[in-house]
Image 1 (cartoon, rainbow, N blue to C red):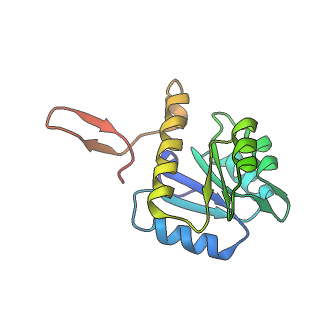
Image 2 (tube, rainbow, N blue to C red; image 1 turned 90 degrees about the horizontal axis):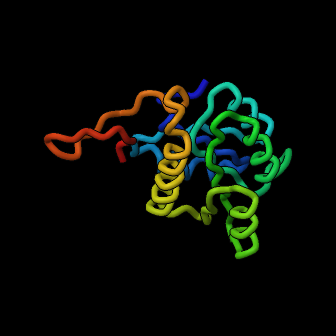
Length: 156
C-alpha cells in the first residue's frame, strides 16, 4: 500500500540502487512521498491497487522498459504521467517519449531543482486532466496564499 495522500505520491521504477538513493535524498526534504519498485510487473500491480499521479521510470528495466509500463498504465483509470529517467537522453528518446504519450524525460545524474520542476508540472497536468474525478484525487493539503484565499496543492 502506498503511504500518504495518493495525490502527493510519486512512484519511482528503477532497478538501480543509486537512483533510489538519489531520489530518497531529493524527496526526503519535501512534502512529496516517494515509493519505489524495480520492475514493470511490480509497478503495474501497485498502480492497479493504489494509483498515483506521477511515475518516474528508468529507460530499461529487467523485465521490460518504459514503453511496457506506459502501455500497462493506459489500463488504469486516470493514468499517471510517466517521466522517463535516462543517463544520456538524446533527442530521439525525448521525441519517442513525447510521441508515445509519456510526459517528460529526466536526465541523470539528477538535479534537485529539475526533479521538482518536472514532477510539479507533471502533477499539475495530472490534476488538470483529472479535475472531474474528485474521487481519484482525494483530499489535498491546504496551503494559504493570502489572508482570504486558500488553495489545495502540495507543499514544496
